[in-house]
Amino acid sequence: MADPMKIRATLQGDIADVRILMRHPMETGTRKTGTSVVPLHFIQSVIIQHNGRTVLDAQWSQAISRDPFLGLRVKGAKVGDKIAVTWIDNKDDKRTDEVAVMAGS
Amino acid sequence: MKYPRRSFLHFAGSAGAVFIAAATGLLKAGIAWAAPWNKTAFEAKSVAETLKGLGASNLIDSKDITITAPDIAENGAIVPVAVTSRIPNTQIIAIVAEKNPFPLAASFDILPGADSYVSTRLKMGQTSDVRAIVKADGKFYTASKEVKVTVGGCG
Image (cartoon, rainbow over all chains, first blue to last red):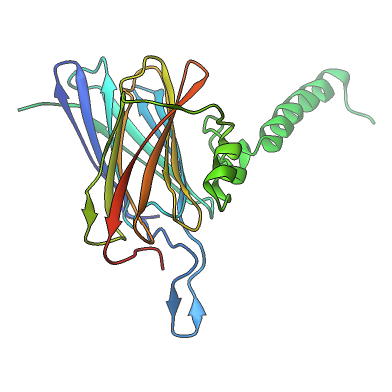
């Protein structure tokens, strides 16, 4: 299974500021090592859920940078709410990580 | 067939649901609730083809879309781009790097519960306009910002 994502969700008023760092090579299929080309390998779908409800559904290309970053804002959030992030790549590998919303400073 | 009628209908019903999910490409993803990946739009090689793949037409230039990106990106492999849409009922935010080999970088379905704001990092092959396409209330809006790239990041 891939390396865990780093997710931080901090409350600002009633909006959770969510920042996610995923671990993935996001290969474009054009990079050469020696004489061979590294095949296309990238996250295609990202789903963000707030307490089990999908709030963002993203489709990505191989042009998203390696170790992808995603920032979003979730409305109507409270401390302790669950934010779950799932990614699925073009090889059908997937990973889900979850955090609780923390109080903002 | 020798199956009792009740269990045959149960099998047919569940097989039917599986067939529908597989046909729409959702089952392959292993998650029934993810939107299907828009192959036509992501494999488009021009901005015009990309817009067609997104079903976007009659684009309206909008000052209610803010693109936050550097004027000059030192490293084309990591270009931070954020898009904020102040257009009510924003449904989709798509990000296009016009001169990339495949211009469509990302498309975000903004569902109830999320602000119409996304932030990510793109690879850009060369200096280009970064264009945001926003779908709101069934209409399409757009804005763009030029990002100069000193070292290209696609290869």
